[in-house]
Length: 327
Image: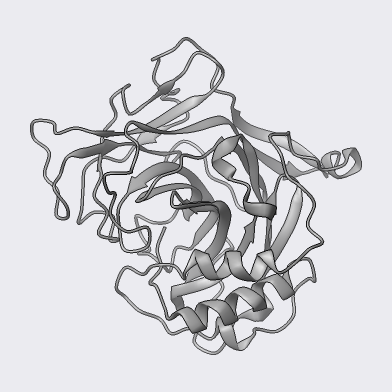
């Protein structure tokens, strides 16, 4: 959830490097990964450049509203250790033994976001059809205070902090993202030592981020000391202008002691590896991380919403699951 926007030329170069790396394992760091640390809240490179580079590839198969297509032999390598399937009646809140809420507005989030997070059922509740609905609404509530924007948007940010965290394994969610200018859905992870170690030294793994204005592209990244501003990023786009907002898709990372691998609908689209780090960068993915789901609005990367942005906007989550390797 943190990155700064560099130049378009750098974005195109990085996008091509990302696509070349996807599926090729872990080689040494490329020049596009040579980023400087920065204590300010950062933002991500232009998704349009990633789409342009990806559309040049003609060997991509269609992805549709289907479950993860990983083969059975691969699934047999993993043991389910935590999950939420979001079963229950409509308007019931998420299971409080599994999820907590982070509340309020900027400057808490560090990205100049516009939304104010609440724990109300109207912003996060079951939809009665086996999904969690995380909903952004155009409204102003009594007591809202925001450091950015008009302070008239509510949403929700859920976390398993203090309830579930682990190091290494497979982490996935099946999600239908919303489309619209300024919308910023995400499924991600933060180091569980965050109360003792400040970000980015605790580590951040972005399983999925998307821009509502470019809903055909999924973004994955890791952030740590020395790769704050841009992080080690991987991206993929659906072919022929298809949109992730048109249906559910499975977003996943497989995390080992020296590598994070990203998947969309069971197909890998890139790795970030310990041996890709450059001088001044440090691998901090050696301890438990907890999970987060949120729908942000506005901010440095997606930009502000406008009159075309549909409210209420919903991110639907079919399930979230965590697996450990079978021994």
